[in-house]
Every structure is written in structure tokens, then in C-alpha cells.
Image (cartoon, rainbow, N blue to C red; front, side, top):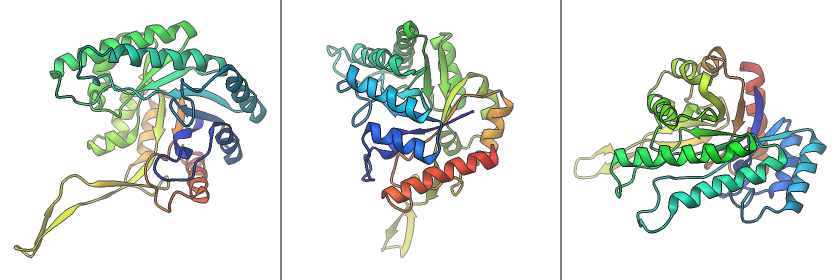
Length: 294
């Protein structure tokens, strides 16, 4: 199992300290990671900004530190675009293809993508077919560079383990795999060991973060009481300190045959703040937890 860190962790998107792309690679090596996953958008691996000179610099930096970049994270939503005259699907497929073409020059093997959010402008069945067709086309296009697609259980369509496997079957491409994460399955109340063991043969990557659940309530002064304000708030915490049973999750993955890329991410406001020292501390704690428990 290859241990990687996702560049989104140091992108400054949630107010945390920010590193540019090349300094992030230096940071990953300094922390002890053997691989990086780069996010396919600004401020890191944007298809609008990456050129041959920067690709050479990335390759040299990776080689210097003796680390790899097996995965690029694409940010897709194949339900987007309620205006039918706008070629939304074509634009996203081209984006994924562009990431693959650029990533091939630095050794990328996997493009992670998202499926689709629920949408009001299309019936559920139409949305399912549209998304499967788009992912199928992405698979066909990245195959030119010998790459795989990994669908992450992040967006609404295919978020449950059963739905993920159904979507994978419908895409029906040999280079289509899963990017299966524990946090969404845990929130859905799934048995993490059982589902991880079941999906493991299809999993190329897993992206990991830990959270605590904080219940929300609204005060009703006329009742001198509180009522539920809806779903819990999740707050990211250092790895191993949250509610997700990662020991069971990784036991299921390993027993099911997974030997891919396990990536740590800090992709929301984090307990302890967004200063560089806290980001580094949490990134190191993930590696320590993995070495002790997996």
C-alpha cells in the first residue's frame, strides 16, 4: 500500500496556510510520504496553467525526492449544466483528457473523478445514464496513456457502496476502478469492514480524513427547549481521533486484496487551526497511525 498526501491539504482553500505546487512536493518529502496526489485545479495542477517547463520542474522535483505522483484529482460533476445548449459533458471530458495528457509526463497512472450531484433539471434515471456515459468516455480517452479512472464516493450519485458497484458495472470499462473512502460510508451507517472487504477488488485508491460529529440544535424560547436543527456538522480532526473506525476499514480493504494508494487529505477546517505547524503535525500523525495499524 503506497502512502500519499493530497495537495488540497496545503492549497489554502479553507483559510489554512498555502503552499504552491513545487514547495508542496518538497513538503511531502520532508514529512516522509512516498507519493503525492495533486489536485487538478488552481493553485496546483490546473490544465490552464501547466506547461512543459513546469512539467519538467515537477518531474525533477519528484525524482530528486524519490517520490511519485500516481494520482491526479479531477473535479467533475456530470449533472452540471441545466442549459442544454452548453456542452457541459464535453467540457468535463476534455478536462479529464487534458489532465491525463499532462499527467502522463510525470508518471500519473490514475485520474480520480467525482460522479454527479442530484439535480432538479434531469430525472434520476436520465442523470444516471448521462453520468455513466460520461465516465465511460473518460475511461476510453485516458486509456491512450495507459491510465485508469477511479470514481470516488463523494458526490450524490453512487455514494452508497451498492450504488458505487452498480455504477461501476454500468460503466463497464476495464480501466474503471473505485476511489473508495470511509467517511461517506460511515455517515451512511455502513459496516466499514464488510463494505471495504466487498469493494476492495475494485478499489484503486482511498482518500482518508477523520472527523467528529457535532449535533446541531435550535433554541425554542416559547418552549424553553431545543429542537434538532438537522444533520450533524462534521469537523476534521487529527487522524485516529474521530468517529470513523479506520482499523475496521483498512482491515476489510487489505483482506479484500487492496494494495493501491492510500492518501491523506485535510480538506475542510481542521481542529487546531490552519497554520503550517498544525497541518504538518496532522500529516505526520496520519503516517504514524498507518504504520502502527495497517
